[in-house]
Amino acid sequence: MGKQQAAFEALKNRLMSPPVLHIADPERPFEVITDASDIAIGAVLMQDFGNGLQPIAYKSQKMQSAERNYPVHDKEMLAIVHTFKIWKCYLTGADVTVRTDHKSLQYLRAQPNLNPRQIRWLEYLESNFTYKITYKKGANNIADALSRPSAQLATVLAAQSNPRVFD
Image (cartoon, rainbow, N blue to C red; front, side, top):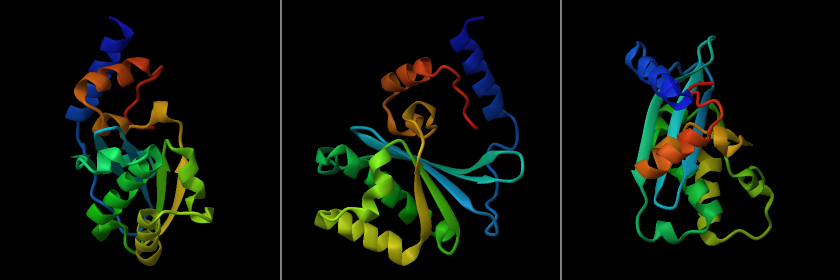
């Protein structure tokens, strides 16, 4: 059996075995993994229950036509902001770590020249949530699958040396 087929079978078995999604525990910190492509954004809400990160929810959404014209760093930030809006009921009052494959977002708060959209987004996040943004290399980002068209998804999965769904 080929490497890709073995990875596919492992993923299929993992997705079919319970529990696929966990119930959120408001006492535990959350981890949000986000990604943006040229046409869509994706995110996974996760928590560690003592046996590694487990998924709570998944989100994928096609970008509006105007959003597709944003620069890459704004598309990645859009994924974060949209995720916080969608999962506000989970993330308000919780400690949240955001993992993104766009390294510069770690330093967005310290940038002296932000555009009005970035200022609005940061004001929303800062006034409603306790969070930190961390970088994780794009090849290991599970939200990639949620932000890519299916043709790109096959390429992303094939390019991963160890295509694990959950670290």
